Image (cartoon, rainbow, N blue to C red; front, side):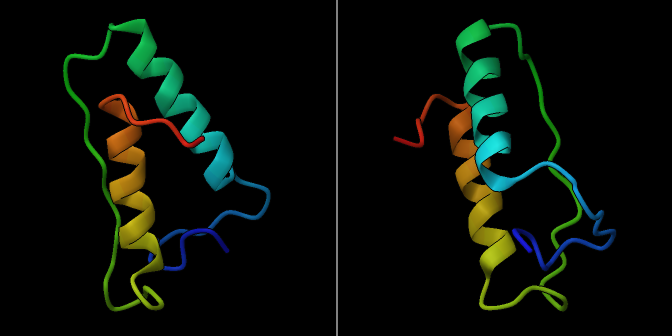
Length: 67
């Protein structure tokens, strides 16, 4: 599971890599004026895996790239 700290896991949901790609595409489009990232539950998270992924995804939205 890419995000064990999420409260509503979905089998077959979007992967970490797909999420990064989506954030990178949104960043390049220059159409985003605001964003909200929700549902990172530290009680459910394992070794901060979800929190680290959330920060990386937010960074991608601000222009960082995965590769």
